[in-house]
Length: 442
Ligand SMILES: *Cc1c(COP(=O)(O)O)cnc(C)c1O
Image (cartoon, rainbow, N blue to C red; front, side, top):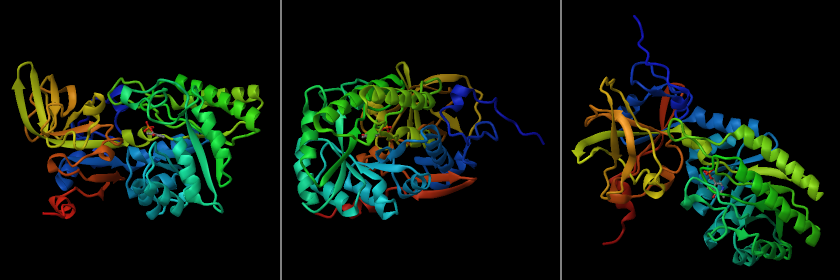
């Protein structure tokens, strides 16, 4: 018997799928050794598949590429208990920005001292939970937070903090995810002196120990340059702090934002180049300023889990209207709001059926009651695409389910982990019973 193999995917094509992807039969795509059709049959659609080995490999790549740095996984990209375990076992710390993320991680065994709390508007509950659970560091993002935090810690207490500064750099895949520029809601600006002023106030609080500066430029950044500019500006501020306060900060946190390829041929951030050039820039800048080199911290989210996820949808209808072919599926903006928010684009694939039809340009739409509920504009799928077909969307691991909503009471999809040929449920599908349980009034 001969096994039929599809032509080997090109490098660009394979770059958007987990490394474990195989195609034992034409269109019979398998991830982590489990055929996607099998997952759809067993768990239903829509469903999110997470390749455990891919997540772990990505954590290891970060540790190998940045051996001297502390690496914090940004939980907001996607957090569930299993992911917290994997990330912990691979030696990464964790970035959280709410009491919810923090409690989920700590109650599943994540060491609180390796957790950092962020947020431009931390609620009293966020701060109370952080202090109660003993998080490693809290990143101060506003002047008002300094006195609130100092009071909550109490005169006899002690809390390590960093301060989020705005270096005045525009970087990131979309205006809505650029956070390094002046004039947006995050951090304290260096340019107008807010950062310096806040730092002086932190130094007046004996119970707060300032360990370093933090910045996060934005998300989906594909060039090394903005990070180098950030290093220079942050070390510049460190030099002024040394002059004014004889302050030597042992840590420097450059945030996350590392860009990945969503479609074949897309550019991704080169991590090896980032590691090497940031190290050189940091060493040079510190030497020039006469400062010891601080320990580098980085906070990747998307680049750890994004490419490890695959979303599975069933086609429900195919409509030819005007110039467009609309392929509507059983999920949409309630499980993936990114196209509606930032206009991002995906390259879905037909799986489970080998089609010899010519490729056609189609619009993959969701099932929600909004014309903007488009999952993939201008996608290429076989012209004979039809109801009942299964579509797989790669690079679905980050900022899909973590941003999912209850819109139309469709219910959020389950998360299925795959590893070594086995699939297991991590997060079950949201059901009508879940909606009813929260709906307590009449
Ligand atoms: C969102 C965020 C990250 C992670 O961003 P990615 O683009 O997912 O790498 C890291 N740090 C902070 C403070 C963030 O807000």
